[in-house]
Length: 224
View 1: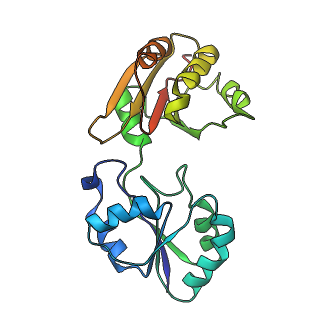
View 2: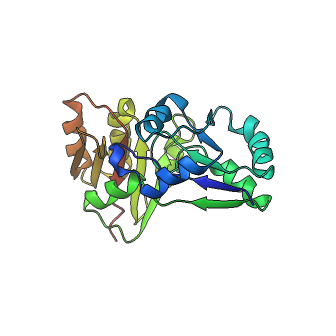
């Protein structure tokens, strides 16, 4: 029987990939990548020469039936994203769901996900948390934030560098200047930074510098 393998890839340091991930990528018939240029660097580094095709948020609806047909023909496919675990704020959910509907086996390998090290490094309670991923850029953004004002669990968000300050200011307005939070960026890369403080302190810190890289914001829940 054919199988879809969901394979996490490093979020920074290439050494974070698992031996099992490498062997899986070498053995499958086809690798689906969010960006073939980015993934091509990873595959070349580990001497993986399997067929590579693009599968991203702009074509996943159109290509879904095609790749289901390939799986039903008996071929094995590995799904990877640019970094981290596919389907976590990245393409993958639709393909996994359709495989489940059609009784195609799915095997998800454990591996890198940016929010886990960011949460642990934050020093905020991590026994219970909510993962919000990327907030809407415009429509619905304030509604989502307001819905979290009474949330007492630690909250986790993804954000882009150019929206970091605005995002922190919106959190400060909704949750209060003194709410504790943490910003992690460039996780596992050379210039990794983890900054903890009140939302007001984080705003002042990041206003004074140029911010690059993927960002995870961890915010303490409301105190009871």
